[in-house]
Amino acid sequence: MPSQAVQRPLWHSINADARFFWLSCIVTIVLSFKQLSFNLSTQLLLMINLIIGLPHGASDFLWIQKNTTGVATCLVGCVGYLSVVLLCIWAWVNFPPLALAVFLALSAYHFGQDWENKGTFWQVTAGLSAISIPYMMWPEETLFLFQLITFDHPVHPLITTSLASGFWVGLCWCAIQLQQQRWQYAEVLMLYLIGYIVQPLAFFTLYFCSLHSIRHYRLTVKQQVITPSQIYLMLTIAATCAGSIIMISHHMIVIASDVNLTGFATLFIALFALTVPHCLIHRIKSHTH
Image 1: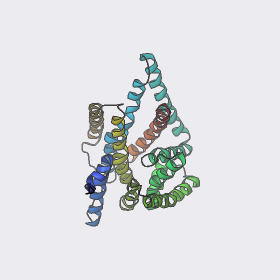
Image 2: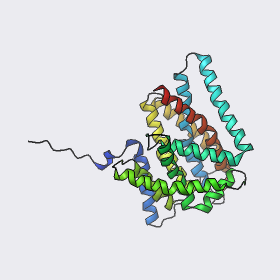
Image 3: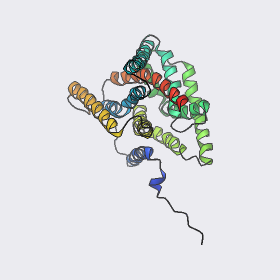
Image 4: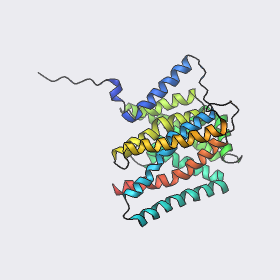
């Protein structure tokens, strides 16, 4: 008698590192259908990014420690990493439009690895589809943020053209991949829907914190670069620092809607400075495995 295939519950069919992302998306969609106000203050979004998103690159230093021999070599690796960070900050301050273009290109490549491992071109295609969504859905708000983080420099037409092209090419690519039953691209399709519902900062926070960073944490633990207890400690330190800064500065977490966006601008510059060495570490990892 032929054995019957065991039906897996839908919840177990979803990648474990994406379950929090899907829950966040479902909550967002339900709230939008019920026409409930879901306006998170910029300061609260900033805190979420500081607590969950930004620390995920800290495992790079643990990787350096694990893959170097001796204290001196490890110290050289860490100093080199921090030197790249400082160089990136200097480049952003002095050449913000160019730095923004480099940041978006690196982000497309890096985020594309959440769904694609075929090659650099397809990784950039997948990643560009994700980062282009806020611009296509909320163009005025996105351009305002670009000008904010580039100190009121005009956005180069090449950036807006690339984002517009990436949006439609990525949507077609997503449809093709889903037709081939590559179900991880359902996450990208959901991002298109979420991008229509929420504004750019909330969209970035939802993707960066509930999917990309969580996926990176789980992958890092799987590769035994960092233990779960180290992750909890890292998040606890980040939460304490971020919470203390915000509480001291504003005396409350959720504040008025006219909050200054300088903190978020600083966050994006920090992300750029950390993304460059983070991507370099990932390239070294790929060549050593």
